[in-house]
Length: 123
Image 1 (tube, rainbow, N blue to C red):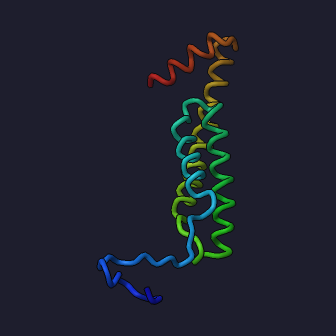
Image 2 (image 1 turned 120 degrees about the vertical axis):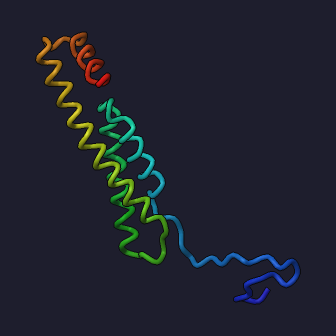
Image 3 (image 1 turned 60 degrees about the vertical axis):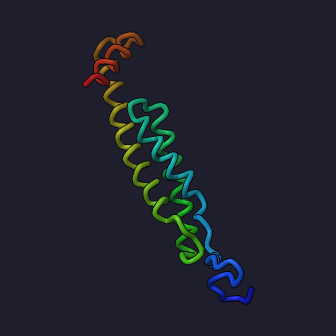
């Protein structure tokens, strides 16, 4: 078919034009890690690293998109991954501090720490 043809002359279906854009690097992975970090804020040993990695990957992807904005799609996923990751970092850090202080106040043993975390998670 000649270039610029919008419809197939035989079957009439519309033609997909590839304008050279691709999904931003790290967009999907950064978003998923940021989201998982938010889901695991109640377990800071998982939520905190997932959130941090999500923010880093999304940040690197945003830098590449800034260098060539017309060449990438998915910049919104990168922003969402960063926002979710930052929120996950903050909440996980606060929860971790609360658990550590609560564990120390209850005697510092692992069993008292777990009792406090169960009490806090039921609120």
